[in-house]
Image (tube, rainbow, N blue to C red; front, top):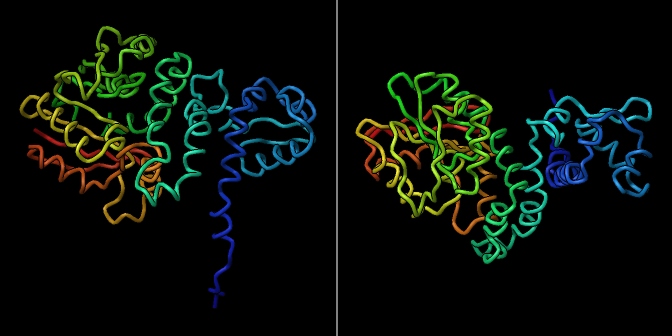
Length: 336
């Protein structure tokens, strides 16, 4: 008979999980993986190149080896394949823009989680959202973040291209499109589709460059606008990905109504997020993302598929259904 007595391992690992997280985030901030993409280095060489001091640096590097993001052969460190692919700033697959934001904004905010749980508000309400808006004033930061959004959405976009009946529709517009990952993947997979993406005007060049790099400028265009203040463009299908969870219930319903009115009869709204399972037990990422909305936004929260389908019905959609996509993301579809 197996020993079923509990041990403290899981509790300690979970309680101290931030150690490994911050070790990685600081490595991204310091450009460790970008440096190692140029070739392996000793701890002494990395200490000099990154402007560090010797105490603790070797322990930090070896911890990153143990965490699976660095390799070590003899006294030389190098990137693992995943770090080489996603954490080198020089590569188009770089995810670090999102992690840099997590390090600078999310990590400090989560330190105020207890207070947010007690008050129901971000620690600094005046600051909530300001870091995000400030990013739109810095084209390089904005470019990195928009590309990180592409890396986070590409799996969902590829799955959506296969799982939705695109043969019934001709036009699609992504609301809050960032670089344009979703319309690009849909257009690549389905040559009959045209459309584009709506986002704030500051992102126009980023969107157009990304679309042009895939030779789709003749089929996809940029729609500048604020999805609360400006009319939504009309298309057979509208997409809202990683958007709805940023907002309060009242604001969510405003966006859903605006999408409903922009669609033709028979048109479809596709919403994708880290949709929480209806039993609220399995999608840990979605549940923690909703906690992240508590510490980062004035009223945002993530939601279950049942929640979303109920809201869609409330604003007028006649049919709704849910479909898993990739990783923690699922889509909820409403038909007008």
